[in-house]
Image (cartoon, rainbow, N blue to C red; front, side, top):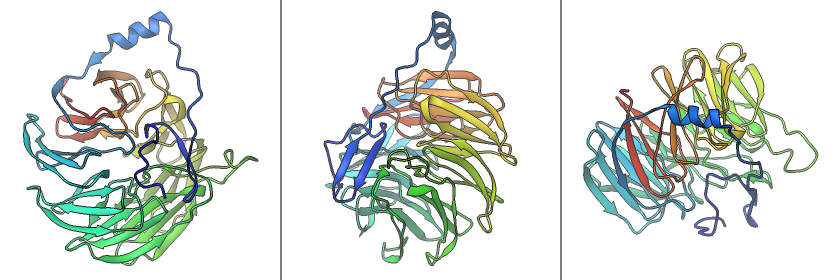
Length: 386
């Protein structure tokens, strides 16, 4: 069993799970660093800096990855030591901090008055905004992505390919879905997306499913990318990131595979393009933005899949999932930088450093602000008024 394996490498690096019983073998990136000439280095240094509003410190990340969560003027941050901290998002003032006996592995999921966290031991914990525990529930194995809640149903995904639905009032189990788990998979915090009364999730082998939020029944299943190649490593085409959904389309991207969009109602493929991403994607009304391998951010036309632009000179080969902030696209990187790109051409307009350690998860965007959490436990909040 993989839970609590403290000797594992930093989660920003790609890792392969050989099986649920044999553990993990490392697959570290072997690419050479990006080489910049003097002019390019000068251009990066000359980019406008994003103003820092405040910073704080929580426990460092050795295995898991955490997402700061914003709600009603507050920012909630968890760490592996089992601490949950509430900050005033505007000032950075610490409003409260609780220390549990648990070792958190995922969080913070937020919604409907709940703060939701997962542990290495497969425990789901629910708190209110005052820091009081409401309930605790057990699932089958380690939780790597923040639990989500919608319509009084909490959805939790575990490392063994299961999706659990829990009652948001007391944590009692409502249904379980078992996804396919091949013998060789990418260890990832793939998570789930909740929208339109459905649960959307990608799986190893390039499969994307839509489940009923209330019953767990399969609405449809489709393939984002087919395995290719001879060896097991070459044939890996796992979906390791969140699908994105609007009123008509569901889009997803696979590692060593494709990015594709499907009809929301029945999963019919609308378009697909060659792409590889372990970080993920986001969409607006016009484009799908994908963080691809080797530090590339790419934009594809939402309706046709036509390639619109690519940005490959951000100083890192490992970027987070992109997020949208108005007319900008925001990504973090493994050098601890937050990068802001224009949505229509991908040009870099501003960036800011943190503590030099990797930003492991997508930035949290809120009114006039961006917050990130680093591997060394830095919590940095930046103003987007620049």
